[in-house]
Each structure stands twice: as C-alpha cells, then as structure tokens.
Amino acid sequence: MTTKKHTINTVNKKSADFYISLYLLVLLTLITFTSNALASSIKDLKRQQIDEILFNIHTYYVEDLTLQNSHHIKYNNQQFERLYSKLDSYSKYLNEYELASLFDNTNGRYTGIGIEVKNIDENMTIVNVVNNSPAKAAGILPGDIIVSVNNNAAQNRTIDEVATLIRDSEFSNIDIIVNRDNNKNPLTFHVTRRQINLESVTSELLDFGTGYIAINNFSNHTLHEVALQVAALQSHFGYPLKGLVIDLRDNPGGTLQSAVAVSDLFLQSGTIVTTKGRFYDANQAFYAKRGDILKNAPIVVLINENSASAAEILAAALKDNNRATIVGSQSFGKGSVQSLIPLGDGNTALKLTTAKYFTPLGKSIDGIGITPDVAVNQTNLSQSNKAVIIKNEHTNNNAQLLTGNLTDLQLVKAKQLLSMQ
Image (cartoon, rainbow, N blue to C red; front, side):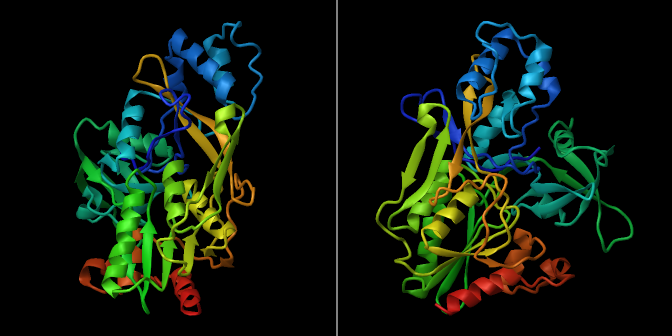
C-alpha cells in the first residue's frame, strides 16, 4: 500500500494536545492516504472506543446527527454501525496501521511501490507513477490497467481492496500484471516495496522570463519548497520573474496550514480562507500578511477535476483576491475540514469532519468546486507527460509517452495569458 502527503496542524490553542487539524485528500488512490475504515474494522471496537467515538461525534461533528442523548444511552454495535454510516465519506476510524501511515505522510514519505490508481470504467487504471519509485524504475506507465496483484485478480475489487493486496502481501516483492493499449498481451512487472520520498514541488523555466511550478500535494515541506523553487527560477534569470504558472492539476490536497502559508507567499493582504463549524474553535479566519514573493508579477493557476481540498484553497485565495487568473476545468469541490482525534489507547484515532471552509468571498465550494476564469478542457496529463511537454524532451526514454497528442492546451493558454500582461 502506498500513501501520500499531508501536514498535521493544531486546530486551536485550547485543545492543541487533543485536536490535530488537517485537510486530507479525497481521492482514494494508491499514493494517497487510504483509510480502510470498512465495517470489519469498527465491528471489532471495544466499548470504551465506541463511547469515545460517540462522544466526539456528538460534540464536534460538523452536523448535528441528533444522537439521542448518547451520553446516557448505551449503543449496541449494530446501532453504532448505523450511526457511523451517517458520517460523511471523509470521517473515518483509523486503525494502528492507518494512523502510522498518516504521520508518515505528513513528512512527505511513504512505503509502497509508487502508483496512483483510479477506477475508470470499472478498470483499475494507473493514472500517475511517482518519480524515483519502484514502479517508475520497473517501467509501469500511466494508463496501464491492473489485471492482478500477486495472482489475485483486481477486477471487481475496490481501490481499498487492491491497496490492501499490495500493502499486506506476504513478501515485499510484488508481481503486478497490467494491460497496456499498444500491447496485445498483458505485461508482468516485478516491483519491491520501499520507502519513497515525495517531491511536493517541481519547477521549470518558461519563455520570456516566466516560470512554472507544479505543486503535487501540500505537506509540511511545501512552503519551503515553493519558496526555494521560485528563488531558483529568479536566480536563473538574474531578475524577478515576469510571471508564474502554478500547476495544481491532479493535486489532491493536503493541510490547511500548508495551503494558507503558500497562499500568503503571493498575497499582500486579504482573507485567505475561513472555516465554520458547530463548536467555537472550529470558526476561524486566516489573513494574508504583507509581502509578495513575486512583487505582483502576474500569476496563472491551472486546475482540473482532480484539484481538491488544499489545492482549492490556494486557487480560491488567489482568484478571489484578484491575484491570479484560473485556467482549466471545474475543480473537485472538497470544502470540508477534518480533525484527527486520538483515541484512548493511543494507537488509533478518529478522523472527523469538524468544519466547512469558505473562500475569501464567503462561498462554499463543497460539492461544487472552483469555476476557472478561462475554461480549457482536456484529458488529464500525468506528471511525467507534463515534464515531457514543458521540457520538450523527445528522447527514447519517454518515447512511450508520446504515442498520442500530448499538447497541453491548458499550459499553452496559461503561457499566452502571461505573455499578454
């Protein structure tokens, strides 16, 4: 099983040792933090854990579920499971393994093979392969469809189940069979799980003194990485950037504080984001401090349907403060805040939705997403494909990526907009 991203931050000073605020990415992929909070895991909970979970739902969940005085009524397991099923899809009980994986994610590392998977037309399709990963080294490509993992068929399984096959394999060596469009026969790859350090931010030089940064996720390193990459671009030109493209496509999110801090890099003033919930400390507002790293040079932000959570916070902050032009397609629409609440045994936790967040103009994007200023639709491009296009690399190593038309229409539009300013 592979995981990806996320910084953990306290919600408030009063309960700093109890609540850890985070924006967790919503896409259930093999390189995101995947929570296997299936019925089997909560059926095994002890009475004390059930009571703790009930108390926290009653007190802090973003919606009042009318728990019928759960302080006084003893829920049996069946009643508890029914209540648990009423929580939103982002609220989960995390077992010991999942909690440990989450903390690894916050430091930009995970143990796995390095593939991102989505269920497309009932096929377990690899949509991205992480750089410097076992999967990348083995030759696995975006677009490959997983047929089996260690002789276990992937068809008719959920993403969680396929992730479990990889994570819980008896051996660290994994045999993955895939179908590839231009191959008549399935391909077999032998990969070994290992720890992978993730690059949160990558950058490239564009024309006419402009730069490009791709933020792949928001971890506790992202602020530092963005600042370093922008400084490196400016150092190359020998003068301040004349414009910047910030690519948030396929960025599933990260933490609230990371998104706020990165937004603040590009803003002189204004509201970045506000949060609202049922309990007092869930209601907060975050504002920009003086100092724009680009000195007001124009910015174009790229988004698509897989830009979610913290990525949407950054996009909305720059859009609503008239700091950037947003190009691409409607974003995912994940506008809720999750808090991580440790349970009494110290090894498990409850990830609970405690607030909704709102853009600087006071809009909720939950289930809606952010509408781009300039709509340009196109098929998703993996990070590998983006690199080929941006660098104009046409070498044998990436020849397999160039089998189709890889023109990045959204990036072309972004460069055009910057050249006009």
